[in-house]
Length: 239
Image (cartoon, one colour):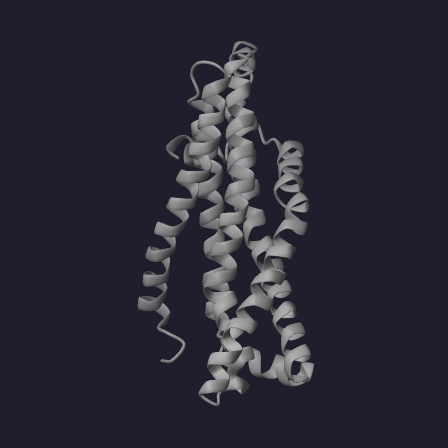
């Protein structure tokens, strides 16, 4: 982390590799996060409907769905899904390069593998995680509306007007922006474990596994801290 902070703003700027990594992180994860969001929206609406009907509060389903998805479920589930996909890939790729001495060859050639391999991947994760989270949230809300329409024939205008009446702009900014921190965690942990591989190909697999586990745990722990800080600074929706 210290090396990243000290070097990411220095030359050389690997712009082409950064865009390639953004494509790898973002474009190739659109289908995965889209399916995840659709499942989240439909299941959450189905599971909540019965309880809300029991208390005569079915009308607040869109509002509850929007608050649940945008404030917590969307950002965390999206980040965990991406941690599973990207953490293993980055850890295994850089670990393989370390084992086959490709990184050593770059250093001998007076190149800067840290800029090319680490900084580009971490920045790509920090940029694309919030974008993918917004995409997941939108698909989840669409899935919730589809379930509401099929179950009770709810008009889309009522769904939209009800869904976002209690949602604040600060909620969207904070809870979507925190995924940039999650992206930093996934990128830095995966690259560190890949760079630290010593031994043979068996260690590469272990590094990939540890990258997923460590990234997921750190995302959950960091989310607790961020949510607590946001409640102190911005207050809760009810206040």
